[in-house]
Length: 389
Image (cartoon, rainbow, N blue to C red; front, side, top):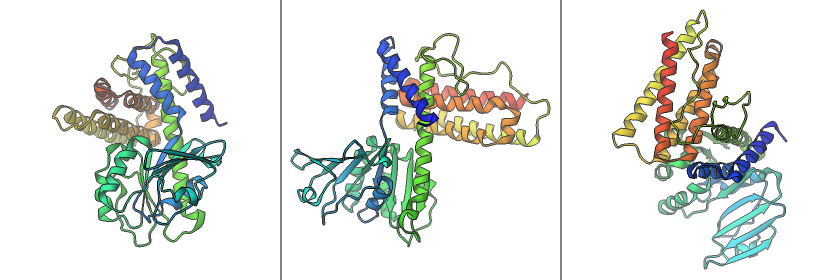
């Protein structure tokens, strides 16, 4: 068991104990239950794309499983870890068929619409893979994306050449799918495009490669993304425990307040009594801090304008965007040596703000949206104080 696994187990126990005491307010209780569910469930990966785009090859690469094929019939299937291979088939008439082992041609011949499969393969521990099968038309793809959005954490779109038709369908997908989205190109005649412009975090290609080599970079990226996302969730849960007086201070986490905060309070992060400025500040540190301040100010102005001019969109989307802003800031600060050496407390402060933004997104709601806006303004003010010192 890794250190992260031990920390996750400890955090789950803390959340369960806090929930069992029954002393939380209604909203805090709902947040606690949500954190428990999120930390305890496997990371859910969704495979999308047109028929023939290579989704089954990706499924095999990620899970080690080869599912039987049937000419003209390819149901949507969900694969999770389980002690023994087993299959539950949902039929078109609403009936269910249960069978031991993986799906076989005889079962597929009955044309199930959805398969739930368990396998003891270790590659599936902590993961759930949903392969979404559709017809080769925009309407079916759009409906499938809408159905799958609340059921996955990471979206992986498989494509032969990332056609304009696919691009248009993807741009109509629910915003939540773009929180963690990857484009995987399986064809040779691929169109060059900026993945970020289409809402993807990154892009991989299997062109010119064969066997396991075709998927090694993708698998490594997924491993790292899942590990980082899990760690963020753990930090958010531990911050929730601290805010509710259920966790003592840890060196790697924010120190608890003198009194347990109510969840309904405005979100704040610990602020130093005065900005910690080195006696002689390197010019490159000042320059980078100025660029950081400009980025924070621009983000704050944009988000506050959207909040108050009616172009905001739904609350969940905005909270996700606030979290992404803090994540980008945290990556920028922790990745700059000059900033860390000159203002060692800044990285801690911005990382804490990111953890709190994640917690606010999990809690959800209009009040949390106001807290997130306040948090961004506070970070902007703290950076400005360092520049003025």
